[in-house]
Image (cartoon, rainbow, N blue to C red; front, side):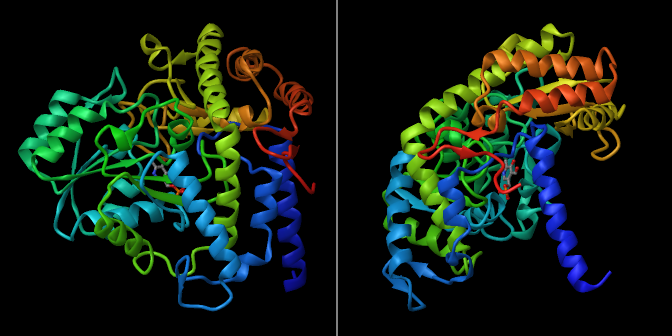
Length: 426
Ligand SMILES: Cc1ncc(COP(=O)(O)O)c(C=O)c1O
């Protein structure tokens, strides 16, 4: 293959990937699509520009227009997240975490966090940002039935280990963290409290989950492209009124963890913030309603949906179990669903120990299905497709054909100023 052929092959694969998502039910909980206005900002000349520093204090010329963009974004982020401090430069949730860990802890310090086996993110682990910062990790005791830290045991652990930083939040995130009591225990021993809202940031901003910055968190980090429906990127937020602390957080992003911070994505983030101010509460409410409906509909179809006694979920996610611990049944279910045009990811559940071959569950998300206009009725249809593929073991090509026909009715991105094609340019 010549290099020109390789370049063409890449563009063909880009389009093929777009068509796959256009024609399927994308249900990966961390994914979403962007609005037409956000897409225009992202696909702009800004993609190649630099603006190190903060609005009005730059190391480069040519930043006047970008200063307008970032200043509007900072004001909007402070309103959307009801807080005194925002930094909107981070290029991802992971970079936001690295920056916050840099600002809040020193190498050799102790951090408490949710273990990855219980749903914590890799950036909370030794193999990720926590290890990069050289921190000693101690994980919280976990309440498997409630899918949250065991509050009394976690408070006792914090008092006993006296960490410098107590980190909360997960990637598998069904219910709000009972934060206040554990944050009080952390503050009692002089620790700072950080909440990673990567997954649930849109639900928090939309008033549908919890309000960590007013329940004891000193800093909240997050991604800008999950339930918060913007382009890839991150946020670092705080309600502290301490300007020295604001400076420390800003400098942990630049020069701490970013140089160029992807100005086109920041511009897209600022448009997404403006759209969120207009449509975010409704969007967050509809996501949670849909997730609860999906949980109930899957259970009615005969699936083992976790946390039945708590109403299955209070977030954008639903967890299902497809076999015993380490059976790999989740892996097989995800592969069958993909053949049927339903894109999901396998997930380890309590008892599973092998991340690649063993997962017995699926983690399902509804942010994208909600964004293209599906409601509670459609969640019943989606659950029926799951049952046809996985329980009735129906002809997969027939299920896929019906999924494509069903999805063809949901091709417009909603909750934004200019509705348009959800999967443009194909
Ligand atoms: C809890 C949590 N934090 C951080 C991240 C990383 O976010 P990003 O993919 O934006 O780096 C994720 C990713 O899903 C996550 O689940």
